[in-house]
Length: 408
Image 1 (cartoon, rainbow, N blue to C red):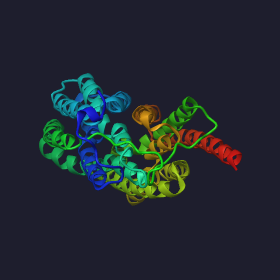
Image 2 (image 1 turned 90 degrees about the vertical axis):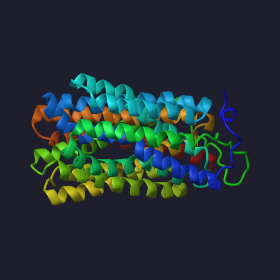
Image 3 (image 1 turned 30 degrees about the vertical axis):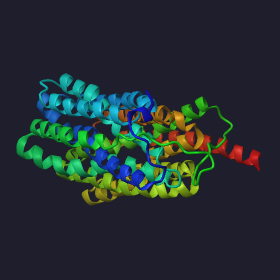
Image 4 (image 1 turned 90 degrees about the horizontal axis):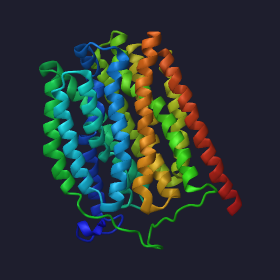
């Protein structure tokens, strides 16, 4: 079954329909990405109810990221074969079912399984697969389109942690999970059905068309390098994103302030993602990635000496502005250097690496906290992984420059 077998012929690349599809995709991602952020907000409540330590309470998030990572590859391969909407429809139902089952869990194990098997896999459809799908609809503004689609994830991070604490305080985390599950079902299914048109193919030599850039590396070697870079940046990225709420509670500032900082971080990440799209369309995805990686490393360092309430708000804003554009740049690089027909799978693999980084980093930070009784060492661990990311990106840039020198 091909993409065009599933729907009527598609309008062209960079068309008005492409922009409308991007808008629908952003709304879909903003709703569906609740599967990633809800578990962060309820982490303290789940830990208290099930009576586990911080590392064990972090496992549901890790399981979510593992399922999310696997889903990015599996769903990515599926959209290369049959288009976006069928895998998206199945995933949306799985996400809703997972939220409802998690609300009924009676142990940390059941909660973790619901998060990993259903919520994690279900949520994956709004990230790598969605980015790969929208990348086929744009040439001239591909960087903007890719980062805008990815921004839905951060819009969710700004929206849901703001809404959830009030509902949790009034009705409890279980009611909140069940209500979100029903909301996802009744909103995501109609949105997915609006994306049934198959992606067009760019004709060689057409206005705005882009050829694959040569580089003195095999596709497999390039993929491995991007996987290492993605893993390193997201182990580092996970420290503030996963533990900022718990960190604020440990400092005596309360859950509400931590949730506000997470929202600010994600809102700033949206700005960073959109800005990085414009930058990538001008200087390329690789150079944009270098800028984001270096700035993220510096902002992580600021968390260690600045732990006052006001300063944490400022540092969280700086962190969000620094790291928001990093992950979408991997998708842009894939489209710049690897064949379009492999986009779903290739982008899915790189996104899987970034998600594994988030999963490992989220658990690792909780483990380090349990060992040391402080998050200072966890921040240092994140900085070390960020340096690995910068090293891998630097090697890629060196190889790309070799191709430029030879061509000259």
